[in-house]
Amino acid sequence: MKLLKGLFEDAPLATRREITPKLGLALTVLLAIVWLIPFLWMVVATLRPASDGINTMAELIPSAKPTLDNIRDAWEIGDFPRYFLNTTFICTGILLVQFVTITLAGFAFARLAFSGKTLIFYLFLMQLMLVPVLLIVPNLRLVAQLGLYDTLTGVMMPFFASAFGTFLMRQAFEAIPTELEDAALIDGAGLLQRIRHIYVPLSLPSFSAFAIISVTSHWNDFLWPLMVINSPDKRPLTVGLSVFTATAEGTQAWGTIAAGTLMVIAPLLITFLIFQKRFISSFVTSGIK
Amino acid sequence: MSLAEPAALPVATSAPPRLHALRRFAAGLKASLPAYLLLLPSLVFLALFTYGAMGRVFVDALYQRTTPKAPVRFVGFDNISAVLADASFTGAVVNNLLYAVGTAIPSIALALLFALALSRTNAVTSALRAALFLPVLIPMVAASALFLFIFLPNVGLLDYYIGHLLPVLPNWLGDPDIALYAIMIITIWKNAGYYMLFFLAGLQAVPEEVMEAAHLDGAGPFMRLRHIILPELRPTFLFVTVIATLNAVTQVDHVFVMTKGGPSNATNLVLFYIYQQAVEHYDIGKASAATLLTLAALMALTALSFRTLANREGGP
Image: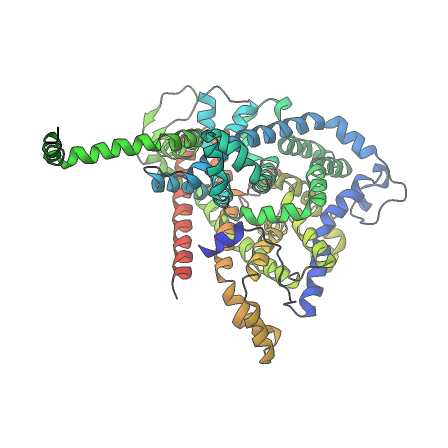
């Protein structure tokens, strides 16, 4: 599995020489512009006054008299601060529990010998292949039986363990020289102390890569929270946006839809633009998620 | 004293070997205890939501559960045959296969083009990579909201700018012959930048000396692409194909927001069918049967491709 191993390394993602002729680059530049058009339209439409009428709605050139009315309307129709809070709560909750579970399990796989190691390793590996999204029906029944239907805990719970995160931490912990641990062992540090004071601080880049992947994917989750959540005040951003879009679509309020979409995607996009390099190398790492 | 020791030795060796093994096993378990305790939190959640869910989906598929209060009835494989006989399920499978091929091939081809063109790092290529990667980060629901307007008949972006070049203005999401292709466009837009990253990573494995030598031998860019780069990227292709296939089955948020599986089931995909059976018709038996069939197909596919991948890398 040379490929998978390669993906786990922090790759700068560049070869030294140019590979395609100029024609390929020209085509790519053109396509990159096309790729940005939906975003461009979103911004332009958000700032376009409704008085411009539906016929100019598709114009990519900004209106001469930009307005913030659409943002105000979207803010009033949808409960965006609430959705934002719910999503933040879900992502943070999942991530905090995951940090504990993946650290402990990753350490066990990296540094301890135990009976049945291979078998348990394969059990973890299975989760990567099982595509959790498909297990929504049994998991919804379980969440209901646990009395967690229509709760944010119910939304979070299936993701508390992460095989991908465990493998990532195992990889990081294996790279730490055992001499460091031996020194702590002589000083009488217990297992959890060694994990906390040696392994965790030296693996912060892996934790941050995992955090990026975990938060991005759960920030964007739609189907599972849609099934678990019933109360409007517990909706995450994605579910809130879908309800908002369905309402505004009926009234042809495209400027408002654009404004709502902009509010939903802005936080993650801004974070990406600041930490671009980090994001990209984390996504390469996530290949086997 | 000195006599007791040699006497003790035969006693130990004469103990039944099975007991010996058992003792060793017990000692092994005891030594393994710390590891088990560390793995326990993860295993509890995996057991509940992954392995347990697998088991429950299998059991649920054997029972009829139609309303929350109705008595549960064992029906054996009736749910499975009912799903297989359901035209909207088989239709969803066909749609999903078409959708998988129609999204995987263009997005992988584009990803390769992007990676080749942007292989060198400088300010321009970094900006272009970011532009192509942006759609990966936004929720499918948000992408769908934007594309609802792009596909809007007459006034939408697509019709406004290029619709006039076509003989008739198509109803992108309303025409059963076109709607599935329209939602494919969103998926390609969203995923190509993601797959690009894997090709960029794969390109780094191409040995510099080989490229240099080919260059000196007078091999043009297309010769080098065909005979050096593409063969080197073979594992990446396989890997990205697996991910693209899984994505084709698991990304259905756009169907929810844009078409609800319509018009006349033209954009119904397997996961949306499962959702409909479970949430709209409250038929857990049928939803579970459909889940089971899909899981079996996907697992077989993934196992097969990973074995091929492992063989290729292990072999000559």
